[in-house]
Image (cartoon, rainbow, N blue to C red; front, side, top):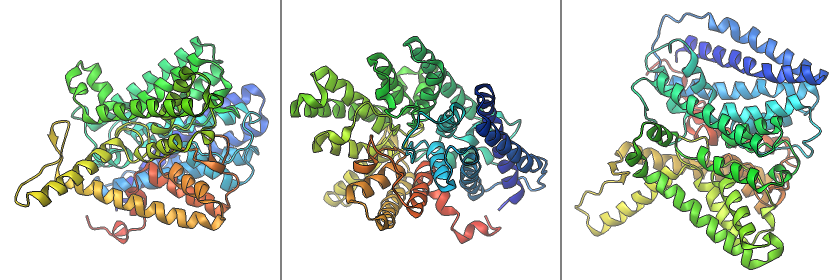
Length: 488
């Protein structure tokens, strides 16, 4: 393991985190929030003092192996959360550090699960930082570093880090240079966020609310600044804008690049996009019909049912976690559709969580391929997605991911059951955190929170959130003995 390059990137991460806390500190200063001001100022100073000297390192060995990239990403996200939680605790907004750590991990991993029972009384600077963690975690802090630093140190560092931090079974380049790819991704991300802020302001949403809600939507995180989430904004226009952008941010960003490059046919032929849109459309229609036919007290007219159905499907499939209604009260059929969407999640290469639609497609086609081989043992069946053959390495990695996914979720559910809550609460909490969604069902539903879990339970769920956001293997690699050897 190349320790000096690893430490240097850790230094970059700490200094950038401190820099991103500056707006929150200025908000605290402007609003006269003395405790929050002290919390942010102290944390920023600590990050600069610890991270600054690491930037001065000049590693002689510039080689970086794949395992080093995974290690840098895993360690950076843990350290990012450790320091990101300090303003919450120091300011007194969340006095217990375990709770603050849970809230921060939930923010950076864009999960949106919260231990807070009352939100609106928090200082504005704290609300800003809480929502901004979604935006920073959505595209990835290390992808941001790749986009801004003068030159990536080490051979292959950009590819290894982008592969470890970007969601999906395959990480590709938009352009030949990975650093340019990172810049393009963040340019699209920033432009879409800015457009959403503008549209929300035009709809009458206050400026501060527009920024924080857009941060939560762009990162598909789901932290709101009101106790009633998006239901507090009694406007179909505002709720529909959020619905549309939740879906946009859960589409592979490569699609936006293809559209900007006027490669419309390539975008249209993308299998993952077609399947994703088909899943969304079918889910919206089935839930709308179900809640409308079950009783008008749940939704009113069919158009109202369609509106709430579209919002909740968008917020679950994108793994954002906002809410306009308490879907705990919906019929079991609708709740089961939402549960399935929790597992599927968004597209690869988006800011959304879950297994990713591309993996579901590859798994489904792999099963069909195996069935065909049983019928025709001597035939060669290839898995194709978007007209391209998926390599056996990718198919094996998807199968390995799925096996680890099921095993870790089962283990987490077993550990969380020590808190002795009912199955619906326990299992949906694990599903919601592992897939970076936020709200589950029953106690952790849209109208609930995670405050009742023990410290051990919260740390288990923190591990689930990190495993889900970094797609399991970077975190598991920390426990591999081979990581600590100097061999390739």
